Length: 419
Ligand SMILES: [Zn+2]
Image (cartoon, rainbow, N blue to C red; front, side, top):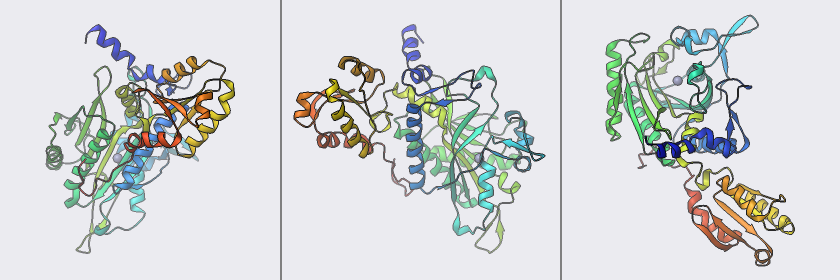
């Protein structure tokens, strides 16, 4: 990378933009690898989660909430204590029993599944959650939002019959591509990770069959995957989608993982068409991967210039003088009543300074109001992308931004609709 490009990339770095836009911080005082989401960053995160949750519900997923800790027996049953302990924190003692901070959400979703009897007619069940997990990472590897010790997965478990497995893996991959494309992310690399040499559960034959299902799903999606030899989870092979940050480094985001092991360990069952009990298959999948990491990559991808539907402040309102403050405050309230996000600068700064402040914050629209605008019942509009747009009223502004806001509405794709 040449010097100039490196400088431009450094300016796009999410830690730098995060501070400039007031999105988040990490600090020694709080603890390494832990994130504080500041109010504007919290809006970005909320919008990301809201988009994802609506898209999941629209496309056949059920939602769940589960705790941050679970009894040690649960992690024994799942095999985590045997195969994943290095990434888990020391247990907490509660009433003489050991509890662990969860490194994954799977066991909780399986307990929900097991709380009822299921027939083959109920399947597939796709259960999703924004589950916050805690994993040990070496302090030297921690970085901004991209590698942290506590993060939230847009996690889901698809519980299905063996016959549904290939179709579910394909749909999960299609859904993942849909989410990436919704944010204009077209540069990513798929990997298929195979059986780890040391810690792995299941026979070579099981691993080979499962890996074949993943390969077919990738080919069906028109993608070409590289192989990550031995990079699978301990319970099965997986497809990983890796994205790039501003410096061109690869980060694993979306993941779709085959599992022929945990359903048996948890004694999960469904009644088949033959009236007998069968063990379902499970697909673990996260599409952002980690909400934190995905936010970091989006901050860099947009260079902090978020599209209108996704901007923490959509409208910066600038009263030219103090006498225009009330009018501008009313305008702010009218926009908020329409579900829009607006902020008025009633400070003593002059107009130029107010405009500069909103520019630094990369606010998509600025609405400036003085005597002339107020007399005509409107405001002057400055678009970050298109410059001065002249005078508008609330009605003409709503009309102007309709298409831009439309981008933030999730689509139904579960019926085979194209993405
Ligand atoms: Zn899982």
